[in-house]
Image (cartoon, rainbow, N blue to C red; front, side):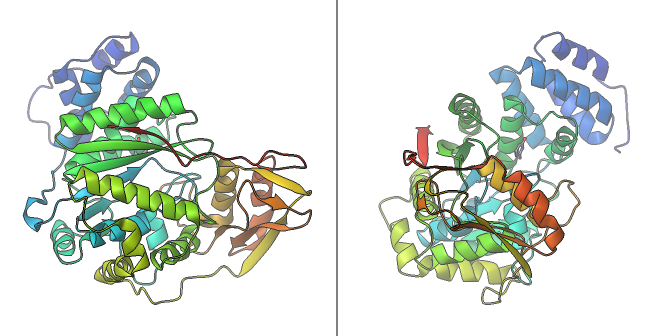
Length: 434
Ligand code: URA
């Protein structure tokens, strides 16, 4: 807790009441409340009340911009101006089987840009990039600012945990929102994500805003509102920002779970892998290269085919202590889920599969809880496939067979086979903004 050196500018209760009653907070009130919360002068219960008032009443565009600014000002801003290549990052709002960062960062670096990807851990039914990479023996997520700059200069890509000094107000507030039912507010989500990305010091940013059952945003209108708010915040802060809205009704690729997803990402880097993972990696890479003016050179699809993206991956993993050639952990126990009938698999629901993977041990329900590297769900088919009754649809992986019953229960209603079902076809990319 910071030492109090004089009278406080405002009273927390006065700020909470103003938002509770539908008023607009002034710049000075926002600056104070975010700073005073970071210093420990505004208590958790007061910030929780204010977050709930914001969730229910909303914030204007100007309030959201100021809130973002105050969270950036709570810590240090990184600066990569000296590394000699344009920097560009991608942020996904989170989905099931979303391992795209893993192949994407090396692909973009192999095409000539530098990718400072400060990532998070998973909570709930979506996995976190750091949890996935930690399934590689020896790999470490924590790097100093100096390490990040060195790796960006030498390798061109780094995926690591945020430094302690990056938007500390957001770290504290996000943990509080998580346990007070106040995550699902567009201004709070947008300011949380963008404060970290702007403080990270990237010159360009591509947002992958997920839409569907496995995403935060269940419908396109909410996803578009979130994407628009984030793009405006980025541009106002001088970061060239664009957004894609992409579908998250069914898992991405054929693997959900930490080591399972790393294995699939390595397949993509080796020129193979599932078509949807390749398509999204290449599409986002082209967006990122255009956003930082490195288009017109090497094509992302080519660096996947010729092995140069794989070379960057190996260097990136080794630079953080990992052994890219080491065997990944495999779960000792498996359980197969079979097709209940013959017909077209019309639904394999992302949320159901995400919860199943979480219950198998791949995710955590408390911030401090450990995750299993080997647990998860392997898909044998995707929606649109014709299946026979009794054909394997999924293989569940766990360290302990006691997890299987609850994982199977999570899938209840999430798998639909229709004898005369139309083959669903939905584009992966639903819209583009910016
Ligand atoms: N991810 C974040 O970093 N912040 C949010 O508020 C939601 C998702």
